Length: 361
Ligand SMILES: [Ca+2]
Image 1 (tube, protein in one colour):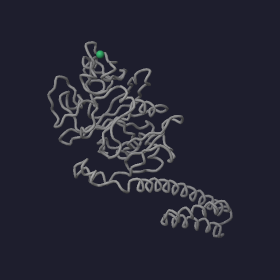
Image 2 (cartoon, rainbow, N blue to C red):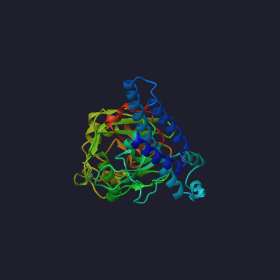
Image 3 (cartoon, helix red, strand yellow):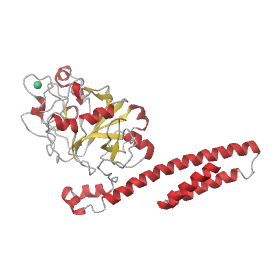
Image 4 (tube, rainbow, N blue to C red):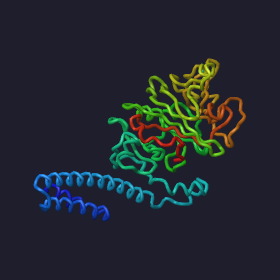
């Protein structure tokens, strides 16, 4: 009991310090359970067993409270950091509906380097550890690499690390190799658009087998999705070559061009290297797919899916090339989607997979 008692005292001090009184009350209840165990109400052997069980529950409870404390610290830090965040700026940047939705989103974390310990290699670890709401968090996929900020989708089964998001066309996706390598876009509001960066995505997918889920929404608000297992991209030396496994989901296998062999010959993206307007690694000899389709992508000759393409409002569009935000096996090559999300989660955490309806996080 001595060690536990000292630990409890330290913890009680911490609780009082951070005003976590309700947590303290539950801790005390557990402490009293341990004391009852020692009161001799049971035969000697049974009493010892009960005591050990109580102790183990107490330890678990302390661990859980520690996690809550950590999350509380993050939130407190965020409040301090953004106390003077001007509401007028929010109104300028979004419609009233979007502003209302923003208020329900998770707190932001400070963007600067430094004082926060980063525990998690991806959003699924963070989800398992703390069950926080969707929002921006810092992760550290590789021990030797610097942590970076990502959007974690904690709906739809939870634990999704989001690496691509289209919502409103505010961010230009027609960018060069360096931009796609390093990442671009905004990381502040729930509906901000971004590309996490090929280097970060590669780092994220290293060391585990990942499931890729692609959430789509058209301009009528209808949603659909595709899931691929064994999603990987290679490193920059190999031009971030795409590798995907089996496809499932209702939106069709856009990354392979569908079931038609002829289309697959030109549009199957598995095995393709990444191309941008200034780095043509596609199989289209007469030109540069990235230039024609206005985005960085794993083009073949060229595609049946172009989620980094040009953002057209309203859906159907006319252009010289099928360069919209396209998922051909669902809405065709001449329909540009309104929302897209590309996100990953380790395959071993499949058990909690959501309905497949997707989330608008
Ligand atoms: Ca070419």
